[in-house]
Image (cartoon, rainbow, N blue to C red):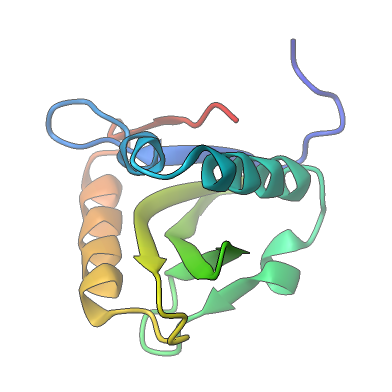
Length: 130
């Protein structure tokens, strides 16, 4: 059933084997963290301007944004980008267990590479099921 209140659609980048990058990443996390991330995404899917309110935009990577969720003393980050109107594609998941506050450059670089691959082949994404 489609939720008529949903504004944003979340999608995820597909790896070469067809696995969804965020689905695979979330499976490695504790159940309480999975629930917190899904709850936040569900909330953000219904808010008009969640990106401006919740996402961090990287100065050096204007097309990449970060959504962070704090849970259990760690920061869980999803890096992604607007791929179309009302759609945010999730490209990389990252955990900062020490809460340093700085996103690793390897995660930003990986997100940018995946975004470029997605632009070259838009079929490399699928809807993310919350």
